[in-house]
Image (cartoon, rainbow, N blue to C red; front, side, top):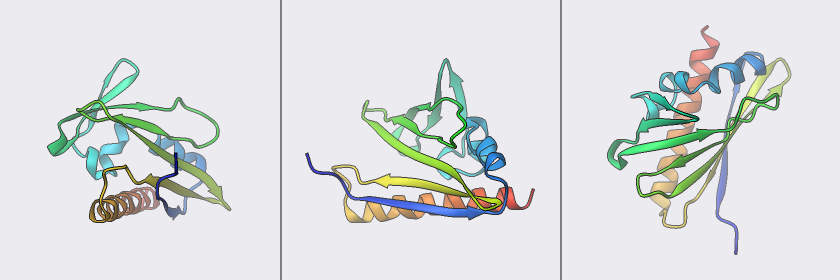
Length: 134
């Protein structure tokens, strides 16, 4: 099976990487910087439930807390299709680099892929603005 197109979207944040990870890895903080989750998340056992907008309710399972800066998560869409999201925070001198790997879904056209990439870039910029002013 061939690989899909992928794009790494990243931002540098002038805060220690552990502080960035500590904030960004908390699902309850995501509504402050991730526009797609602006309505917030509610915990349901080990999963989190959110409003996926026009898609309906989504279920999210996050990787467990770890010392490596990994905030990977799987979003289960209302139709049951899982979308794997790779989100990482790594040291960048005294600050942090936050990277999201966007992988094109099989049925995603160019416009949708570009729209997703732009939305992720806006979210990462919002995270940067939020953390650099605190």
